[in-house]
Image (cartoon, rainbow, N blue to C red; front, side):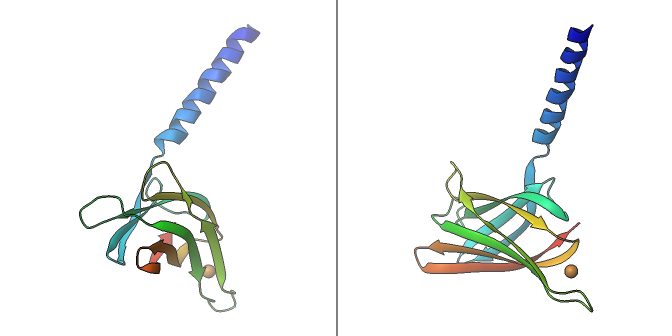
Length: 135
Ligand SMILES: [Cu+2]
């Protein structure tokens, strides 16, 4: 009987694990900077208040991965009324795929965040600036 419950528990854990994996990183927004297309992706294609896994991909106009070194991503929300300005940032770590970097950020609230991705390419330091809506 106990064995049955353990087996059932394992099955549930596996199912939950698969569900988490199924929450694929999907594009949140796409922007252009330094002649490259930059795609920010997050689970389910959206950023939310709280912890977010994120991925930033860089492509040449040809669609090939761009040869860049991503540095970080920063989110900023200006002061609103009595609410102080807020910010959050993450390093962007290389993955085993060229032009693809990953990070993790904790956004303190829903709303519009000014977002800056910093990277280096053959031309030197670059930045992409855009805004996202955290849900
Ligand atoms: Cu705010």
